[in-house]
Image (cartoon, rainbow, N blue to C red; front, side, top):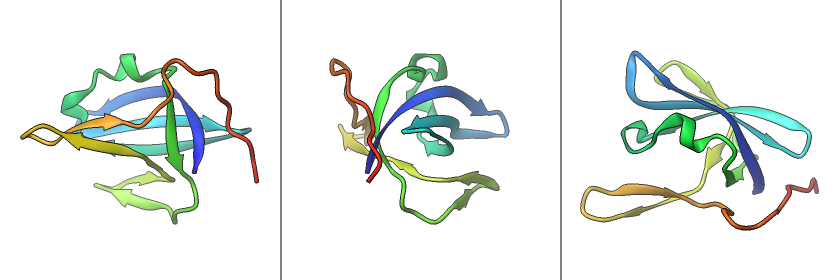
Amino acid sequence: MRVGQIKTAERIVALIKLLKLTVEHCTEIRQICRRHAQFYEPEKLIGRKVAVVVNLAPRKLRGVESYGMIIAASVGPEGRPILAGFPDEDVESVPD
């Protein structure tokens, strides 16, 4: 797992529940797709530091490549996702 910073975030128009994010960790930038787009405004995600799993094989979500996973928890009766992150800390990802 690494700490990554979300650099860009956009909704995939044809896929209402999917967000396409670019996340920077260490010196690498990855495209990561995240479900539950209905719970987030993409522009409010930019700059957030999140916990990212980076040692996963690439996967296609509805035809869009994803190269990692952002850790989240589900809360409430509708399972609203809460991204695991570091809102008040100045943390950086360090390579192995």
